[in-house]
Length: 51
Image (tube, rainbow, N blue to C red; front, side, top):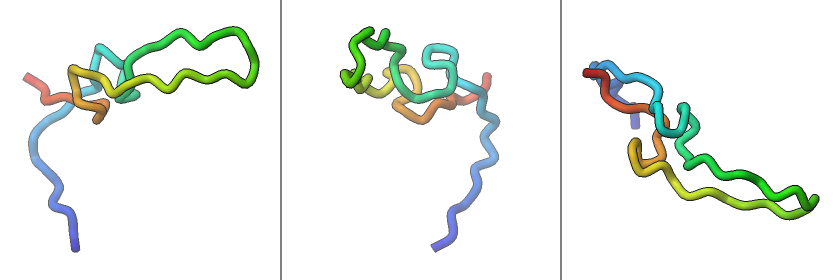
């Protein structure tokens, strides 16, 4: 099934800097990784509608 490209202008989400994940500081211990939750502003997409 083909995906229809939306014509809505979008820009990079300023809250997560386009990653789609909330910024989290990683611990200094090797082998331990924190998996951040989705960005609340863009819903994990990394892009928001341009005004």
